Each structure stands twice: as C-alpha cells, then as structure tokens.
Length: 151
Length: 326
Image 1 (spheres, chains in turn red, orange):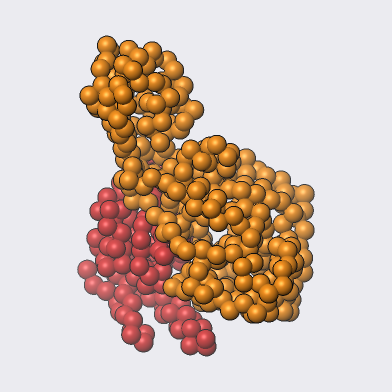
Image 2: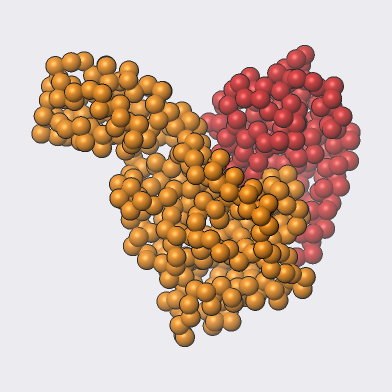
C-alpha cells in the first residue's frame, strides 16, 4: 500500500492511498460490508503521545459525525468522531493495551475498530479520498505552522 | 467573549454547564464557578480507585466525572474554577499557556509570582495551586482549571487518598503534588469573591469584546436535563470506566478472606472468594449472586443481606465482608 508524503519543517505527514478520510481525523478502509477505522497521521501528530484510548462497546450503533470514543493524551481528552454510520463489531485489543501504536503506526497496527456499515453510499458524500485529504491536510498543516510561527 | 459568573455551587450543574456550552453553543465563553465540596475525576479515571470510599461516604461528597482528561481534584468553597469554552483554533490545542497566562497576570497584580510548570500545573514557589485539563470535540474546545484559594488542604488529601493497590486497570492515575493556597501568599487579605472579580477584570482587559451572559430559561432546561440524564447518574460517574480487576484481602479473627472481582462498565462480571475461614455452605452461592450487579455499596450490601453470612463465614460479620469490596 502506497503513501503520499508531505514534508513540513521537521515533520513528515503521510496519507495512505486507497482509503477514505473524515474531516475530524479518522480514516476508513472498506472491505465489503465491514470497514476498519483508525486516525490519520495528521491527527496523531497534532495530539501527540497517546496515553489511553477508550472506544464505544461492541454492538453499539455509531453515527457519522458523532462520538465513538476518546483518546487521552497528557491531561487532554480528544473525542473520536465516527467517519461512518454503523455498528461496532470489533475492537483492536492490541491498541487498547498498547495505545502508543496510534502514534507509531496510525494506518497499520494502530487501527481502532471495525464496524458493520449501514449505508456507506450516503456516508461517502461526507468523506474525502486520499488525494482530497492530502490537500486538506496540507492546508491544515500550513495553517497550524503559520499560527505557531506567530507566537 | 461571553462571561459567566455562575450563581450555582452545585458541582453537577457547573460541570454539566461546561458540556452544554461546548456542544450546544457556538460562541466563546469564559466561566468562573465555585463548587461545594466534591471530587471531580478525569474522563478516563476509575472512580473507585481514585477516592477514599469511606471518607467520601461519611462526608457525603459527590463524585462527578468531567469531560476532560487528567487526574482527580477536590473542589470546595475555597477553590475557584475557571473555564474557557471556545471555538477551536488550531493553536489552542495542547497549548496550556494561552489559557493560564491571564491567571498568572491577575496574580501579578497581587504581587504573586506564579509560573507554568510542565504542561498543565501552575505553581507558586514550586507548590501547585492550579491543575488544568482540556477536552476537544469537533471544532469546540474546553480548557478548565482549578485555583486553590483558601481550601482546607487536609480535606483534599483525605478525600483523594485511595488504596490503588486493589485495582488493576488501564485508567489514568492521579499524581499527588505538593499544593498550596493563594491566600498564603497575599500581602493584603481579600475574599474569594474579590479574587473572582480580579480574574474577570483580567479577562475583560484581554478581550475588548465581552459581556456578562445570563442563562435563558431554555439554557437552564437543557443544563438541568444534562444533570439528570448524565452528571447525576451512577452510570456516568462510576460506571463509565470500561474494565478493571479489583482485589482485596483482610485477616479477621475468623480467618483470612480474599476477594477478586472482574468489573466491566461498573458491573461485576465475575467474582472469586478465597480464604482459610470456616463455612457451613459453599461461598459459590454468594459468588453467583454477585454476578451482574453493580460494584456499588448499596447493591452489594443488598445481595449479601440475602444470605445468612455466618453460614458462609464463621465469626466474620456482614459489615466486615462488605468492607472488603472497596
């Protein structure tokens, strides 16, 4: 699986090809009726070292654009926003035991959960493909960089 | 900036207000509030492993889970809380200094030299008087902090003195710190109300556009609804924490008793009782009865009451057995 890379200052931001992205930071890879989700490289870089992750339970119905769990870094809790509507079928147990995987491998071992999709065709209208997300990410990074530069 | 001077000292109301402003409003808010004695725990903490259950029960101290991360804090009428609830601009995130600077500036006006330390505490001469935490959801952002003004420090340590050895879990652990009150460093004494006014003055000086905001009847309805359906509930305050193992043991004149619990979402999924006590009947009966009930004093006490405890634990009382569960 290939990646697009964007270098900004000392950071390299990766976007994995062939998957979908939601503006609030999660990616989704669809295989039939089941989709795997995680957070983007941009999201994990911005939040920093993950201390713990708490996901909504298996069997819970989640809705696109609404919470599905949260990640805690040093004293900051960041709500995870679901990129699709569906029912949670599986958690990545490894990531709840070793949350650092979210930072080290956000598109691979750091995946979060699997869902049974309800209506992906309509979810797709609010998702970006990797090229669109790459542009969106560049804009976010530059905005961030400019503001940080001002301080 | 909309300024909110909370008239309530109800911790459930004030904590619910933060969520209401974050999820249902679009403008920027700054609130100051004082809570009656209460323990406010971080989003991903295990309530039972953070508090001194006996002290909290005896003094009827409410335990309230907040949205932000971090550790447990004790609130009282001598502690002022500040809260920014704003639209997230990219440089808010993880930037604690931006929100603590107005506090440091206000204290400068009182000739107190306060500093940021690490990422989220404020200290005077190395002693902590303010803990800060944040929560982000979509494009809204909450930064809040405590300001120990004239709290009874011994109450703080008593109520948060939990026995963490009993718990095995993935929760956020609180870190004990050397703490101090702001009043200890004041040249001329002022009241917490006067201190509150000074903080508001600082925020007003920093924000040309501002006005004091009063809740509408509709706002109050929504906040009170959140209090009833979430912040006052056992499910949120105790049951939210997903999974932990609890163990405890004690030697009684009647023998040693050890208890092990697997708890999910606050509910006991499995329990095991071991020991060298004498029993007429098999403790398996009690283990079975404990399945699927809350890890909560009332519920466990109600379950134990169904048994004649002396048939299971010779020379050990029901209260002694109950005490082992916390």
